[in-house]
Amino acid sequence: QSALTQPASVSGSPGQSITISCTGTSSDVGSYNLVSWYQQHPGKAPKLMIYEGSKRPSGVSNRFSGSKSGNTASLTISGLQAEDEADYYCCSYAGSSTFVFGGGTKLTVL
Amino acid sequence: QVQLVQSGSELKKPGASVKVSCKASGYTFTSYAMNWVRQAPGQGLEWMGWINTNTGNPTYAQGFTGRFVFSLDTSVSTAYLQISSLKAEDTAVYYCARGIYGDVPRLDYWGQGTLVTVSS
Image 1 (cartoon, each protein chain N blue to C red):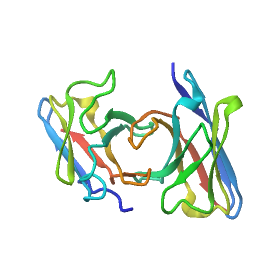
Image 2 (cartoon, each protein chain N blue to C red):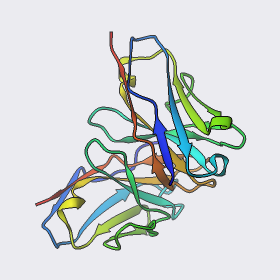
Image 3 (cartoon, chains in turn yellow, red):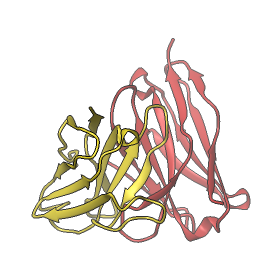
Image 4 (spheres, chains in turn blue, red):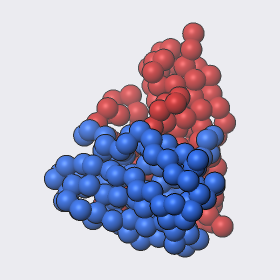
């Protein structure tokens, strides 16, 4: 199972919106609306931000939203804030009770 | 509150074995699956697999079969990851993460991570 493809880095200024893409195949992202997104600050454990494509866990800001089109899932962060600067990872169901992560995207808030 | 507390850092020589523990509290242990995730230094997250905390049945990702073993002690709400025949490339932070049953990658609580260093 190959890792999902994410851009290595994205950046944006405070207040702006950014979108991080996560491209898989028809065997994972394309077949299921079961993508989750995780935020990881340096030296910290990952944190669940989005699950089942677009659902937010309790306590996660509504500035974070998820969507999917075809084999590509996306995470959008609106109203960028300095604390959003982190690494972001997507994760998809990949069949046969297995999951696969994306390679990760480093978000820089300028 | 839900907590996953992992055992401390380990320094091992190549060829040795290591066992990482993940103690759960704040919820019914057997109501959720336990996943394991690896992160090599400066690298991304890698899903290693998961274990059914009801049956003890493990599922391993490609690349994590043979030397990697997931196990449980439900009497103390603890999951274990054992790695045998350690290699330098096993050097990484290993996370346990709670997941729901069913084919949904919803890892909602994570341990703090355990650094395993393999060096002669």
